Each structure stands twice: as C-alpha cells, then as structure tokens.
Image 1 (cartoon, rainbow, N blue to C red):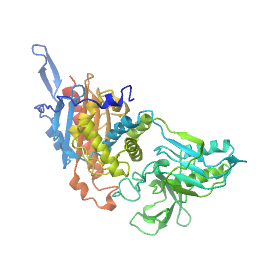
Image 2: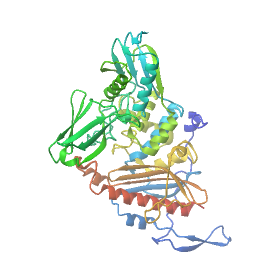
Image 3: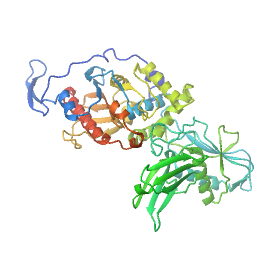
Image 4: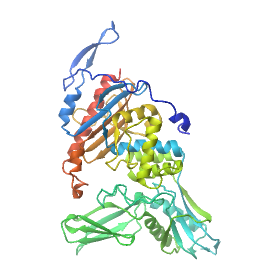
Length: 503
C-alpha cells in the first residue's frame, strides 16, 4: 500500500484527457510588475492585478544559452497552462530522484526496511562461534558507523568474544558498481561504489593538518560519535601542484596521492570508497576489537550461507529514507532504491544501466512518459533524458498532496532580486537537480489563493557541458554562475505562474 492506495490503484488509469492541452502565453511584456485592470467573470467589478514579467524577458535577463523546456499545469485537471519546448528531452539531473522515489515506493512499499545481519554458521560455545561469522548486507543505503557499533555492542551482549572460523562480508544482495558515473573524477564523494553492503554512503573521511615536517593525514570512517581508522584506503602527500589527486586500485586498497600545493594548513573532505564490502568489514573488525571481540580479516563472499541470525539492524522505513534522499539528494540512496526495486520486479537487476532501463520502461508503461531514458537512478549521468511535459504529467498523476508531494522538500521562493522571500504567498515543494551547465526543478506550487499547480523546468547547455575537460569536472569554470542564473529564472517563472494562474 502507498498512502492508503494500492499499487494497482496508484498506477492504474490513463492520463487526463486534457493533459496535453496548452494555453498561449499571456501577452505581457513589462519586466517589472505594473498595475493592470482585469475584468473577471464578465460583468463582475474590475479587480486590479499586477502584470507579470513576460517569459521572453525573463529568459533574456537570465542569459543562460543552451535550451530551456518547461511546463506549468493545473494539478487537478492536468491542463497545460504555459509551455516552452515541452517535449524537449534534456538531462533531468537529480529530478530523476523523484521518479526513483515512486519507482521504489510502488514496488517495495513505504514500510520496506533494509536488514543488516550478523549470522553465525555454527553454535556459540564459551563465547566463541564454532564456525564463520557473516556480516550480511541487504543494501541499506543509510547504514553508518554508529549502526555498526550498535550491532557489535549487541553481539558482545550476547556473549560473543571471538570466532573459530572466518569473518565473511556478504554484499551480493545488490550488484557491485565501482562508480555511479565513471566519467566523474576519481576523488568525488558523490560518485562512490554501490554494493549490497554499504557504509557511510561508501565514503571515507580524509583529514590533513600541517605538521613540523610536511603534513599529518588521517583516513577514518567517522560518524556522529566515532572515528575508527581504516587501511582499505591510504593517502600519500606528493610534492606537486597538479593533478590534485591521483588514484589507483592496489589489490582492493584505494591508493590515493594528493598534491602538497593544494593542501594549505588544514582541511578535510570525503573521498569515495571503491570496495564497500572490505571497508565495512574492516570498520566492523576495528570496532569489535575495541569491544574485546577478536575477528580475523574480512573475506568477501557473494551468497549468504545458512546459519543463525545473532544480531540484526533494521533501517528506518523506505518513506523516511526517501524523505532524506529528497532533502539531501544523496546519489547512493537513489541507486540502492532503484536497484532494489528492479530486483524485486525481477527485471534489469544485473547492473546499474539495465536497472535504469527497467525504470525507464516502467515510467513509459505506467505514465506514458515516452521521453524517459535513464542511465542511472540518481541523475548523475548526463546521458539520462526526460522532457518537461512527461515530468509534469507524472506529477499530475501523483497529485497534489499525494505521496511524492508529501516527501518533497519545501523550497523558499526567491524575489526578483534573487533573495529568499519567506513572506511569499505561494509555497513550493519540489526536487532540484544540478550538474555542470544543467539545472532542473520540478514539483508542486500552491498558488496565492490555494490553487495547486505542477511545474517542470529543465535548462541545459549540453554543448558547453561537453566541452568541460576531465580535470575541471568538479569545478567547471562558469558553471556556478550559470547555475545561479538558472535558479533565478526558475523562481521568477514560478512567481509568474503563481500570480497568473492561481486564481
């Protein structure tokens, strides 16, 4: 069930017969609002209303380049009120996560939970497991060091202090993916590996500080309360200017170097982990040692052997995990949800690309989204495409106040100067998306008088994006200013629609 609605009822039915209708853009040209009398309801008294800036003027002021596609529609009827290139397919960026959220909820259910387990393949005698101890993952995307420590503490409370056999880590619940988007730089923490056993969003914390001679560097699996050191990733400071980072796989160890000229006196950042199973296993071993439990080095396995569950950690509900994903736009969470949904459906679960293709087919079949063509579930890969029209129809089908609307983050409107406007009369609940020279926004706006609208705004200068050199991908010249101008345009369009159509 999804918010009291069955999956069949949730996805059944055709699109609104009027969903494709469009109204011509209102003939307004002044960039600044000016008073304008309007007659509403024929012989009704005249009501003074502020004219909205025209779309061409707003686009000219934004100075984006590239292409822009948008749709605003009545959320109750599906009528398209204003459009610009509605069928233009562009990268959806993290707006893709809104699609993934419903793909996961409609497949797994809002109360689905991930269970990470300690399994013993033999009996526990005098505190020693006479067999193997297995740390078995189920893909939990929010499992962290604190949760691991709680599992180890419970293992100790059950009297376990050692294992006669092996310490195994099982990550085969989901396919192993080395990097969400291999075109991203090696060192960016938002493109980590994925597996059935994940820890700390599969990132390791790198911290440095200038010492008497050179720098002191540390790599740890920190959480809110713990900082266990790790050796599955190691860092060396190299006397150079560029490149800032180099990476190599040293037999399952992430071997990093960093340029000394880039460090300064002190700092920190998160780096991606490429073998999350070994990472989780080492962190478990370190925490267990601090609790007086001796474990051998972790050995990876695919299939979980038979045995008795000694300890289990259960995640929060899928709906709450999605709420966090929509707020913080965590890529790993989206990929785990999408892969888990495809596995439950029995389609496209062999790798990330095939799972994303299965989600594309689902969106086309269930929502008529002919443009849907995803390469992942997070929107990180810029080869994914979706049109504003298909996104708007998707939002209409789900409805104002529906499952997606309730999980979306509220976004404060911006005024014409680009400053936050908490006093605005309309409310926005939406998902943002940002890549270099790609900026998207889609969701619901409740207009000044309570009229609900849906909107999808996709902007992208894909030619400029394609020209970015690999070493500039993390901080492409001009990309930040471009994104700020795109966000300004998005908010001015929403302000326009809330005033024009919220009556």
